[in-house]
Length: 572
Image 1 (cartoon, rainbow, N blue to C red):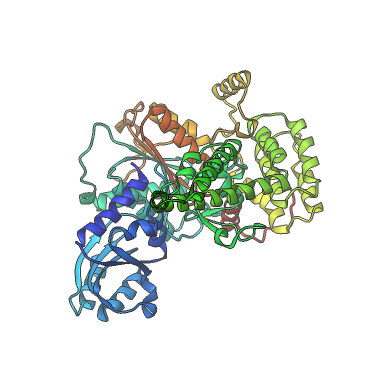
Image 2 (cartoon, rainbow, N blue to C red; image 1 turned 90 degrees about the horizontal axis):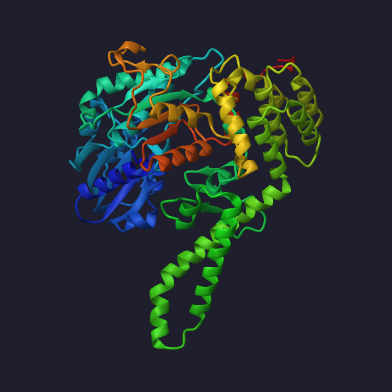
């Protein structure tokens, strides 16, 4: 179920099937992101792919008839049209066409009619319509409309796009799963219906050898846990995304002070960066120590390279120079990233803010939390986004508390000049994921959860900034142990009818679970899945979603789900 390996195998097969010889790889915007997530350009060049370009860059590409052309594209109307245009005036000697998802017979006919020069050698469907984040996490690689709306409906086009992307992941990892979904969520029901219908329609593609026991595809609703996307993060990958944003493994540092021009945009990919891969889930303090050790090793190597006195020294220098240069780039890159994270942490007082976030989300001490929150919101040094973050967390945590002061906190937000749009977001947020919408026991009010929290409190915590555990961790553990309640997460049965409990063993323990969250996932949830896999000592859980959220992208999704013209704040 390795999402990275699934994409790499497709790219390798694409290149190998075209045979020896120089090649160009043509992609679109979306498939460029897919390929770059698993291959560096220098790495793919070693496989005789000497050029990578965009299909829509036809006017700026030269005619090179000695090259073989590999295309890797999404089967959209625009791409079909552009490729037909190119085939009528081919720039290359041979074309090997690869599609990231299912292409219709009508589109194949259009391509055949356009191939007047008979340059097309192959047409293949390679199911890679998603972006792998880590081996155990991925996001769909498709544009879509709002997942949620005030009427709680997902439009047919969005459901189809998300369903096709999810099906491509299942095909790439060769899984034909049972489907379970969040019972109360109409969008989850609709997606479960769409995926099941697609699997039935394309049943010949799912003819895989099956091991004993089917995996489960568990479709969840983001609104069941709106806490996790709001929290500041303190592990390296998650912290970079929260404070700087990772997009297609790239981080923009252009707005950071004193950053060299060469490092204003850096690539952070665990596939191509050993230091990043080793420290993905390390806390920020540990990352700092590891970086210091890396710098010290680099300084030692730099000193040894200064002594070039003999022919033997020259030979050693030339032999080790590529590694030395790579190490130099790695050191400079991570010094720049970690330095900017440290600057933002100190400048915006994130430790104090994060400590209160954890207290609100993990403990029920209302009066103390409210008092501290009012002090922080009144502090002009605190960023507006952090003041809003804390008020949203408080509103979600104490929505039904008899003495909550949501209105008072909203007044304080107004007093510090928070925009009307963000003021209205407090109400929208509760409509989106408040107690009237979600059905999850998000804050652990049932007796079992209370007992677990009490025991955890007695044991103490190693780090007060990482006390929070994502809601999906318990859901996944229950699914693996056959304890997931069928009344809350019914099976979607093969004939297209919704949950029929009698057809399934209620204690079925699937060998593997694929979790898909409508509304997006977070790096904290990816870390929780990584820890489950480490405990199981195998890759048995993968988590995917419609986006990889930090707080900014999450609140934008909520704004898109509701009218931006909410009017004044009249209370909850």
